[in-house]
Length: 323
Image (cartoon, rainbow, N blue to C red; front, top):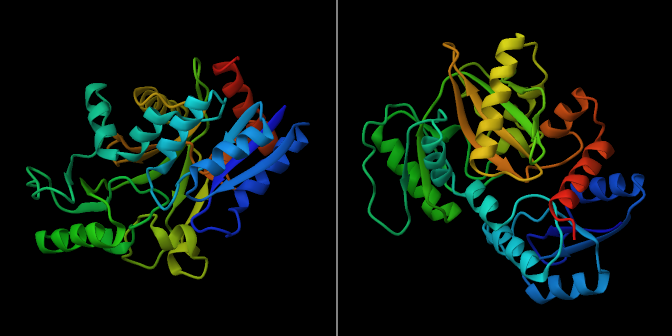
């Protein structure tokens, strides 16, 4: 097929994320004709680019548009209006991915375990914390990629809580999600499929290399700053798990993915307590698809190399949108 890889640029003229080239190469290995459409904030650029390239399918890697973290929601809607087939979530699914508070309300309806939380909006009075118990974890409501998350995100008193909420309002320009911190193992379960989705083997974040006493969280430094102690002290591993526990983790991930109507592929972030409770932290529809990502790692453990994983996502999107 003729496939266009659609990606967003934070600034006009900057280089694309390395994942774009990796996806393009994988598509070419599967005998597709590939073009890249990299856009910043010009809607006409998207429309003109697609009309010129005339793709049979758009592989949608766009996460922001024009500096707006919700821009991918609008662009997915534009693709729908243009009648273009594309991979991953539609506007509704992507909106649920971003509004973590709303997603948790969906989990509540589906009786899926999640941390108790409160949302502190930018444009309204503070909500009371209600019966939330310290320590609390404070993060942006809609931003992803660990933006606004660091060691200071874990707070243990009301003064630190208010300070952190205001920092998110002012520096990230987002509402703050405040949730009870779940002590335990952090695991990611990749999910692939639509009508009959499958869950990959769980991937665990190994925090054992962190400095003593450091919070066991995966913040901005741990994800994106290779020289930091947090980056060097964490790694993703495929843990040895009892069959029953593995199955329970996978079922929880599938339940959460179905609850927010995730399409084609994604990753479900979980916390496992010492007592065996599994909490859904969030569902990442259209999760980061770099060849060394947790999703790719888990897919490989299931027998799918990176080009095969990319092709499966293409097949799922075409199956969903046959015309």
